Image 1 (spheres, rainbow, N blue to C red):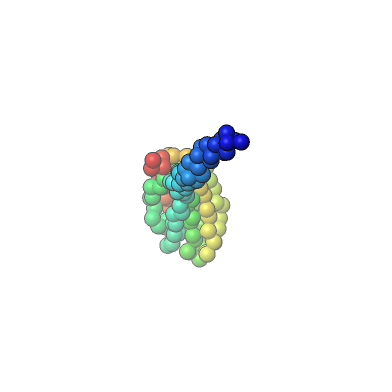
Image 2 (cartoon, helix red, strand yellow):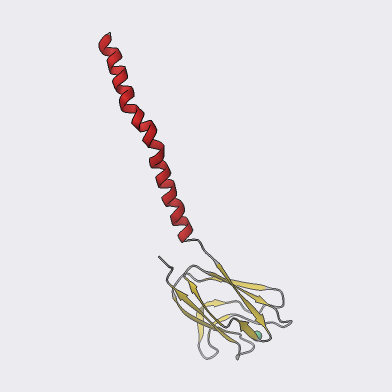
Length: 133
Ligand SMILES: [Cu+2]
């Protein structure tokens, strides 16, 4: 009988540190996961289309950024990848009018020139750089 009681106490002695340290281990993992999700958080950049101009014309963004173009002219424009001489394949909003927006998320680093299909002098450029570590 005495041996049985001693064994009970012994097992409590072993279990206690698990109860004390167990949760803190889990907390550590949770913090790491939160930090990771914060660093890969995606952001938005806004470009205004006004008076036949993309404003700003050139921006540099980290990969994963979503760019939102808003047409503020009372006339249709497009946001088309490439140049009038050599259209690209990445994106083409087609024509959209005042108050409407076009949204595109840049998932790969690179330089993305773009233009308006109706007004070929309207040009812009998105430079996508690798995300900060
Ligand atoms: Cu235009």
